Image (cartoon, rainbow, N blue to C red; front, side, top):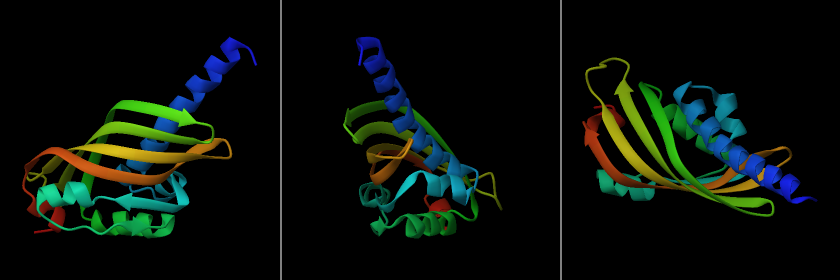
Length: 156
């Protein structure tokens, strides 16, 4: 492989790693279960405990692609969400990757758009190559700051 081919493949892989998180966030925001499912490995793990603890509530570790999709679509069913992904730092080692990234998540009740809960989170994302795309194997979410009405997340 030439240097330019290696560089091009590395750049394509880095973009594809970030694109997995775009599918994850887009699946949530668009309420598109297929898009959300496409972002996750079959045995994926979602760990929102660090962020939840800082916000003052408990949320269990969720394991398995279909369990994660079901949990997220159920817990966010009454909310409109917008996720903004920024500052991804990607490292790739063969067919596995790690990404540290900032994600801002706005949550607004569809029944009362005057209320909101905004979280700026750090995601530690582990991924693997799956065919021609990358999928998330583990996502650990920690919170940097938050503002608004925490009751929005609990449906109060």
